[in-house]
Length: 61
Image 1 (spheres, one colour):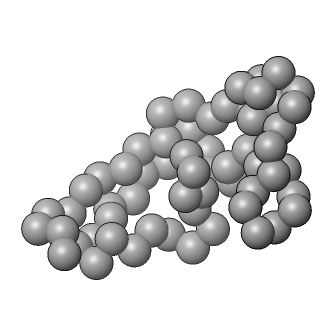
Image 2 (tube, rainbow, N blue to C red; image 1 turned 180 degrees about the horizontal axis):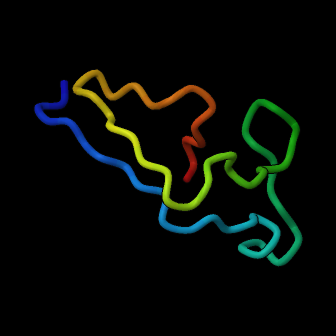
C-alpha cells in the first residue's frame, strides 16, 4: 500500500490522433480507440493512500 498521498495536476491534454498520427490503437477489451481524457488542463486532485483515482480518469494518461 502507498505510504503517501499524491497531488495530480493535468498539465496538458493531447489528442491521441496527434500522438499516433491518426492511427489510434484500441483500448484493450473495449474495441474502441483511445479518446482524449475528459479532464481539463489545470484540474487537480489528490490520490489518497488507497490509490483510488477519480471516476472517469484515464488510466493510460
